[in-house]
Amino acid sequence: MRHQTHLPSHRRHFRQRGLVVLLTAILLFGCSGPKYKQPRIHQYLLHYDDVPTAGQKALPVVLRFERFQTATAYDTKRMVYRKQDREVQEYTYHRWRAYPGEMVGDQLRRDFQASYRFRAVLTPESVLPYTHVLEGTVDTFFEDDREERWSAVVEVTLTLLEEAKGDGVPEVLLQQHYADREVSDRNHPAAVAEAMSRAVERISRKALADVLGALSPGSAG
Image 1: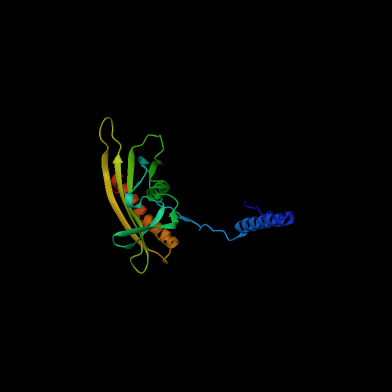
Image 2: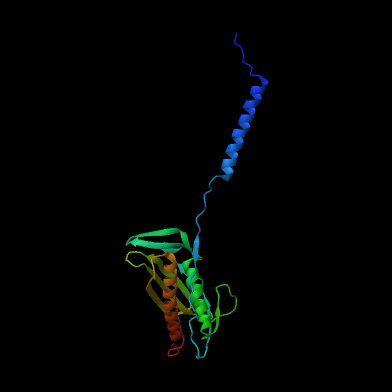
């Protein structure tokens, strides 16, 4: 016959108090111990001054910007960088505020509107009638780390169409590919964002001149 051992009441009380103290210590350590700090996510925008085109008469053109597309390889908000010819990678904590196609399209639309060379420049969401359409695709948009100094690389294809009359097909007035590269001031994603802005600014100036030339030969400049 087995005999059960009974602890005195004061010893049982001591064990229970000890268990409570141990559990309390574990909870307090879990609450007051070192916490994992989430790294900050840095977000960047394209930014530069408006493209000035003063002193020119506005054309009788209502230009609608379609939503710019982005090539599949760069269709991400994360900043893409390249260290090898056939290899691309993405930053985890350095990102664009919007997709490349959206940012480039917004910049060009702002510049075209600020030029005052068109009767109106419309957004993709506008329901107003228009005479011409500008479509665009960002073909390349990345940070190039293959040289000692990092660079911003961007390529854009634009297509200008005249809206069809009746049941006709829209006429293509211009299709142009633009490529630019800007060396950054220092090897850091923030500096590459500044370099990308300067590259997009140059593309915007060229695109505005080309579109004006296609709409009215001799009017660009």
